[in-house]
Image 1 (cartoon, rainbow, N blue to C red):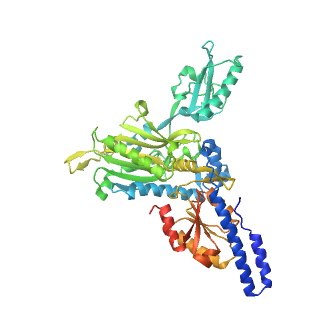
Image 2: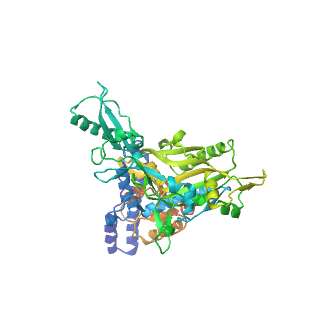
Length: 562
């Protein structure tokens, strides 16, 4: 049953009351108010009694296209330069998107910087002295494998295209290869089956049974195999051999555009921390172990930006370089602590644990200088992918910058009377990836009062709008003024929405759709009887009556945790 308040009927009754004396008009309004409240209360009770039918598989059924559409429709993310047909790999954050993004960064900073005694902050420049990137290895080694389609001129990352031989079961003959873009297993197999069917038909082997797909990315293909693997664009073997493509954006600094003016937009925020190690440590008087945290933009000229904001060319990182003493028996415990702390943080802001996993890098999966690296993964609609990395980087970076600059980056440990170059644990998390993961985690459907409801279950701490204030009617000055006063008080603390248009049930749904955790209804009882308001919880739809002077303490506990 829907929760309705008939504004039309109220207006009609009010108009008719003009024919009566002031006392009669007041009596008529009171009768109308009583009828309205009785309807509201009866429907509220019915809504609460009607248990929600949770759709646990709602997210399992959602596609990436639906997530992208939701983000644009509700004002979270827009394609950049959309009026000029957009620009691949770049996105603009809308009214709700900037709020959610800011809340993510604030929660991270609070958890890992202001709530700790052993981490300090930094905000380094986007453009560093170019020698920074020579020392760090980015000029020579920061690249992705690339292939081109010689016929269509399209370009792909070689490690994001997967090929498989089509081998006949009856004779073991390979009749050709299929090649599909990286996606979740179901999508890749479906696409490969379609291509295999066409391949068998062309080879006059239609309907023949073939072995299961053995997918490998193109970096593992031999020259002989590449001569037979079809391009996804042309359908013919027109792909080049994989070759390295440097991902850094180049620019020029100053009036001249020559070799001496060449600089780069930073591809990561970490190097800004390393080159400021001495400055930050000395001025903060920090003692090892301690960390330096930074949130900032980074830029990578991705060959094929894909999967919405998961892999884009302009993005934001939240990184900590946590400096520790050297020694093979030292780094393990610190690494484990950061693994635990990182997962705890992600869950504390609403990431679903059942969609998270671990990916431990071993062997060739480790950087040459790394002692260990473990990724926290997330199950996106396009498959399980890295969300956050926690690496034990050794002392590679500080050593490289010490040698490249000629400046000592050693630390004198007063407790051991030793000088050494510290080792580093690096928890690194992309703001944009976490944004996408939170939207996916929040996606929900249920039934309320027999009707399907789509909503976003954002944790109150990161929800872009914390509270929606709803005056029951908008043409009762005394009621509206009380609601406005409450709204003004609340917006001094949080991002709060005012919504006075439409039936109360419709306003609840609008708040639910953008993930607002609480709605406050100011009604006639508020101004005539109890000086209290109705606070509705988004997830349960339950409503409680709270005195006006207790609203802020109540919400503070729910939103801020204290």
